[in-house]
Length: 251
Image 1 (cartoon, rainbow, N blue to C red):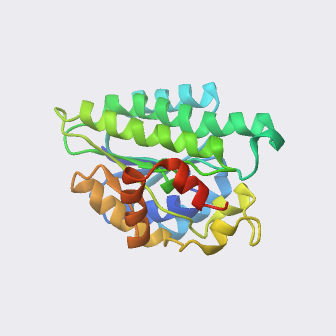
Image 2: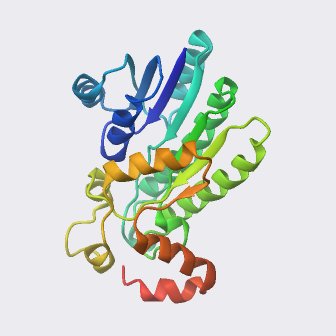
């Protein structure tokens, strides 16, 4: 049974990943998020293929055991794994809720790592792991220190794992968009006027980002960055000191 697994499938680019998977030669699409009702709504609206709804909080130990057991039971061939679940919060760390900052690391880093480790047992030649990353992985963003650090981890993890999996011919890709008009902004507390940077940056389209990101992954690319502006920013991040770029960003 060929399947795709999408975490964070209840909103934003996760929904677009789900839509794109309807075009693939899959037997089933597994969607994971905490909001079961939202997953049902999305699957009923866009699901041309059979689907499995898995409502869970992937930061808990019980959820990892449950997912591992499900995979052991069905023994699917995972053709696509989308590590899409994640969130960010804007604000100075010395004014932040330590619990929320810790949850960010749990979801953006630990859950992604554990799910990938579990899923790799069920992946074969030609499969793709697609990690939703960010332009924050190129240069850290002030007032989003922990989020930026988690995305730097995702980028490093993507590159090293891709190298490890060359012999198995499994590709790993990091999709690195700029801001998108999704629920991410609401969760992050980024309303208009909160951040000069977010008010002025060009926004990426979730649908186009998902479609082109998947295409890049299937072609064997390691990193996909939408929009010329952010492609140029990625180049600058390799050339200029990060302290300069941090100073130029009035978050």
